[in-house]
Image (cartoon, rainbow, N blue to C red; front, side, top):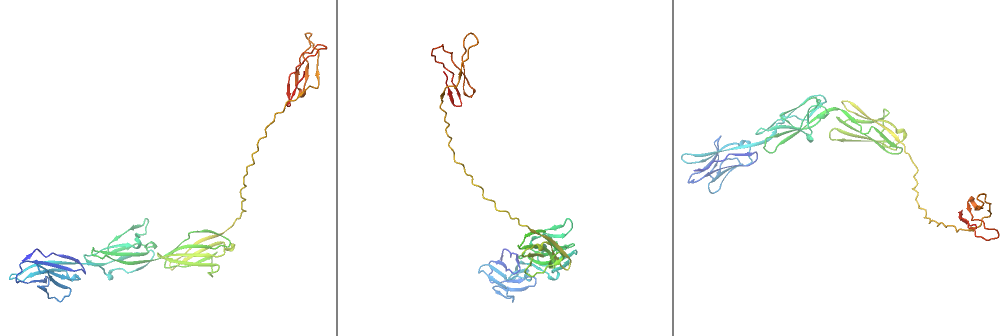
Length: 388
């Protein structure tokens, strides 16, 4: 008799399916496996009877009988029956679900698209799988999807659905789009679809005004965005320049994203090179120009500045001590005695001293007598005068 139930199994395509039924007290009876929908016998006891090389049977020498289906395919999905050949047949059924990862239907999926600026584009993506895949769209390099180049533009990071519509495409729509199909059965798949938008060149000049000294090399640059790839040339005063490699050298670098970097090198700059230069880009859509004006840089030379004068401190002069003059004793050249005019007494004589100073003498002595007359001391011009 059976123990438990045969468990249903879900596997991804390419993996192995194992169905096991457990039987106890089997006795003389035999266990077999059949495909339920077609009643095709796959195994009988320990022997495989189908011609399908991917199917086999194992027995664990106890109670387990297992049916193996290697590298499962969608056709292997369905129900399988484990039978015991008793008088009244006993059976259990277990079902297998084979999940199929997504695969693109190339007949119903868009290929690369070529379109002119201003037209509408619809991209289609179809995929099959079990369960049915979900479809989403992304731009390469994680750029937003521009559904409409209106004002303001309609931008979304991801678009979901089998169709992607782009209205009035411009150079902003140009690039690669990815259709991604996923049904949770690994691996998810994607397809790269290029939308090639033909648009007029766009010319950008990083430096519109430049100057260079005489005798130097100067490089003019312009950035161009265009599809198809533009043809380029340089003009001076409306005339094409001859790229002889001596006076003028032109270089072009094409990068991803329809961009072209164009450079013009002018060697040994001379006053005759002053003027307006034109960067020209043209394709099947249109012709565009960018302008650069070049001037000569006048070099102004100035004589070198003399080094700063070294400041020296004059030696300190010790002050000469001021000597005080020694006083000298002199008698006035003239002493005039005048008789008194009041009180019957002579007045003190006035002594005229040098430098207009005046000293007063003592009283006049009596006739024939000696007397000491003391005069006032007057110091003038460093001299001391005594009179007496």
